[in-house]
Length: 100
Image (tube, rainbow, N blue to C red; front, side):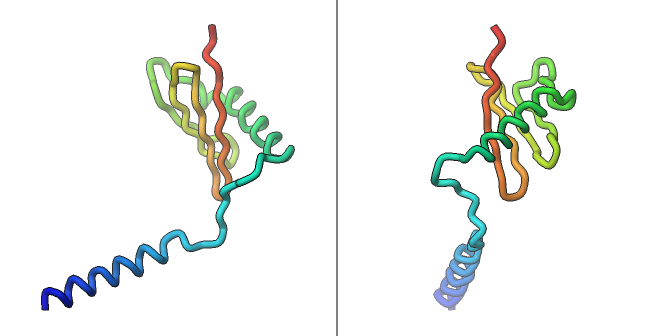
């Protein structure tokens, strides 16, 4: 009886694991980004730097804001700010150098 319960649990776990992430809509890019991707990145970065909502709150090491359809998260690093912005099916990352 105990073996049957364990086997049923393993079968259920296996079914759940194989069904997760099975979509063929992978957005992983294996080649270098084209001109369109570079332009989108530059536009998002410019909007992020100009947006009052995205300004670094005093004393914060992490913060977030929205830039158009993107949701952005920024983290203070020793080189400046590391920013990751994402929307469904697309993500952009960039670094804003520390001011000297």
